Image (cartoon, rainbow, N blue to C red; front, side):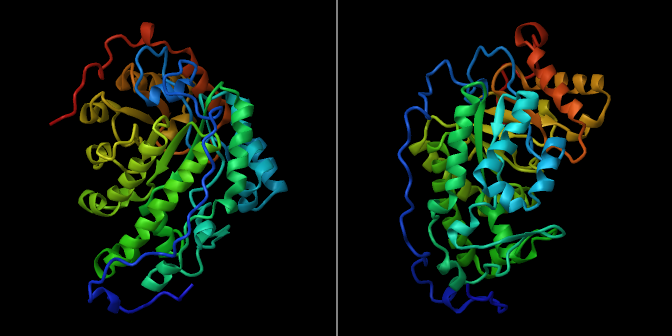
Length: 402
């Protein structure tokens, strides 16, 4: 890649030519398999998929956890000692399948999410990266110039065959007993890593590009939106039944800035998936989304994930019951006495109402979370029944706040 420019506004912005584009090469998307993509009218679909669509008459909320597979499990820790590279663990089909199935075997959640990373597809668009034990993801040549954006390529799905193969195996292993979830990062969130060169607490380079190189940033985000759309379709074609979009760092933007620099590119993805994979529910999660809920609804996703700083009852009032919600138990409750955890689960479920709710944490499972608490979380959820426990819940009949 061309080294990043340190100067202010690039010369090409002054002439206002037609928007530049990255190199064009059609990504190859496999045809959707009828066996992997059931009709949306099927009553045999997993509970989670039906809840995501907001179906009536479900017996209880489905449940899964973000970061469900991973470092809190002793079984995972033992595997990680044998395979210390995260890239190996997340890019080897056998390891992906094994790690993904560990919590499924242990806790039987209603959703089984692929063990992967939002940065996994970056090499397939021409952005190599490493993962440092001390720094996390590292991109040696951050993308900040027109020339660098031009060097990006359409996503090469041949480089991501381990994802497709893993999903196909997992779909067969789960055998309809739970929903298989895939996931992606939103364009803004992926762009933060690409522009900043890795993790950051300030986001100064990418936020500065909004003002000093807006055309460069728009082209980067548009390229990512197209690549991520292709990647979602690939995951669906390989067996994913629901897709979560993580705009992890969208909450670092003021709401009006998120409206301009993140939301339009999420909408591009949603519009395309609604057209090409209309049966697959889409979940949008943003960490720190209390100021964005109404704006998130306008993206046309099927489910909005609430983090734990949003009161579930307030979130329902703001969103109305015409859209499904996910969340939002504080992950720290898993360190509490089990009766306290039980009460919190019941509180969240009652506040969410009897339709269109997927129980989850408000963020990922924390390190050192007791496995006993994770098991209890799912045991309690399976014991719940809307018809006996939650009559007269606060969410019934709600309309969005004007």
